[in-house]
Image (cartoon, rainbow, N blue to C red):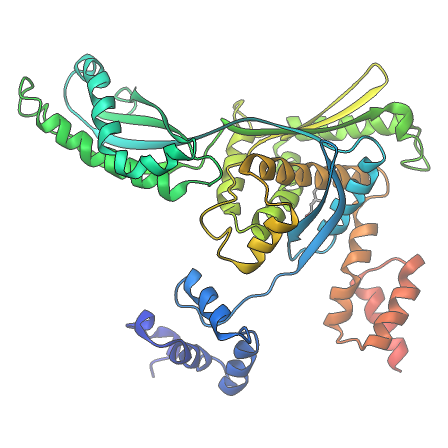
Length: 442
Ligand code: MEV
């Protein structure tokens, strides 16, 4: 007997949405219920739903993730309400707690170091490197002229191609070269713009070389291997920090003086600088904040994270993206991260909630949004390390997780209110909540 799961489905993408949904539901024991469940997550407004359906492919429903707000985020003197989209309990609470804490100590400081993006045309060529290098000024001009129809609008907005360099990689791979191209994409993340320019560069490079009659027939051949942006953007960099006197850290923890807290916090961050296992978790905490803002504003969080993790390994080993300075009675906590983020293009204005998020942030430029996202990374990192070095992470985390556990036990609203009151001064764990609910119900 052939099992359903062994059948290769043909033409799934060509089916109507309802047909796809029904086909998927047949994989469950209760297809009718599955269809109803998935349909219950459809938007009530048909036009809105169509918009969501068309963001991606083979869409059969929507997947909800909470949209929260972190208030009191003061950045360079300006007060923001920051939208955060994240499924993990504690992240918004941690960010909000850090924002409130630092709002009483001068707020967050932030600056954009640079906004350059990078793309590459990878190609093979079998001639002498010096010959290609000598042709570079002419190649550059030819490629830039050829890409004009694509770059003109971006140039009007103040961006465009910044530079094209030839990189000789033949020592690592036979005949392998790159055109390393730098871009300014202004307020857009710029992926489509960059990739279009690079593909045009690839085609034009082939044409240019084919026309160099002084070269041998072999030397006139260029094989374009691929043309694509790099998600590693070490020159699209933002820096954010908080600072206060050591005295202002008194009372952070009832068992530690301000100086002892600063020292312990510094040590925890130093551990993340030297130990890869800890660094990964430490940086994950940073991306809890950054990703939540990236998603809320319709940005590509995978690209942002990929760049951040590569940047964290730039010194030859993977390390913390944040660092601490404690000197002259001052505590300074700093985060530096690449952050290719946009406020125009992509989903930023198409997704109704991303658009709303940008409005809530005051329709920021890409540079301003880089600062906001980085600040939320630092805020989450501060809260996490503060908890880890004082109360431990579970006390706060499990309190925030309480509703998830209660929902697991299908607690009623009355049971939830009673549980919230009861667990105010009790240790939350899956077992303790289960026991409490069972005792209430018996
Ligand atoms: C959990 O999502 C993030 C933390 O593990 C970060 C950290 O350990 O620094 C709490």
